[in-house]
Length: 376
Image (tube, rainbow, N blue to C red; front, side):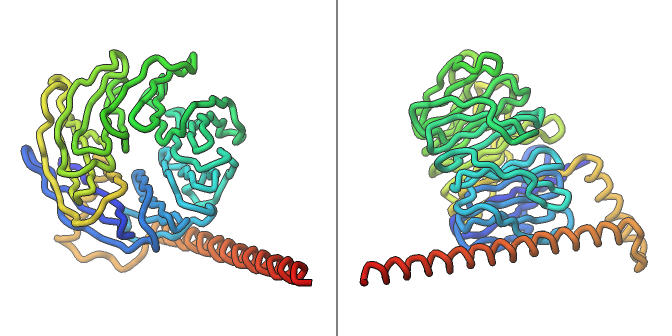
């Protein structure tokens, strides 16, 4: 059974692209599914789970989309500054970090902001949730690496680092994590919280992705992608992926095939087949698509095999019979829940906007008073 895949990419031109992937034995094709002028500034982050797509931008907003129903879901407004990082934890939560130094924890049930805490004195540049969902790592421009307890939103551990890190990521099992500073990547052990090794890339690292608990894929400000072993600290493989620098990478497993997806400033999104048994060999190119845009961020939506099967069965049934006009009780419930969620998001949006306007007016009045006192 072919699995449903959707490539999601954001760009400097403020647009979100969606490409539906048709998988095959040798070559995969990608057809344009949607494009949406989502923001009023360039996109900076994208995150996906089994139902939603979340995009962050320099316009200080997070936009939500229901990929299953193909509808725009609303906006989340809580940050004051660029949304620098987004990450879903399963089906239940979305975490966001921004230039205002805040980390926000959102419930995907009604899209409420459950927690909002000051994570860094400067910008939050990256965050990563532990597989257990109990703690989150974050790095920022205050030259610190922080561990947060998500149960109470308090800092559990602070480590000072010499430079501003811009990427942090847990391994799949949560036994180790990596912190990226420019072209260097430090590997930490969870039990000791100490650096067990350092990997130096040739150029500044722009994106990383664990494909196993020990092997990490690294993309930088160059055309080359490299695979490193975090135990031996050796480069296992490197290959030219694009004609320009690689901005983002993503990995998925389709059946028994491990697939690496890369996005570049040259506008191309490419899909590569990785063979762990022949890790030293250059990955085979499965397919590519030209977006003709300057890409900044990347995500891949992947339907579960059960949903893919149900989708095929539903399409077959619809082709043989006319759909019923009567709405089921569950559909009415889902519809009502969706309307309530959108209403909640829009209400919060208005309240936040009014609060910002009131703050600006108050600051303007204070400025006028100061000028008047100086003139007197």
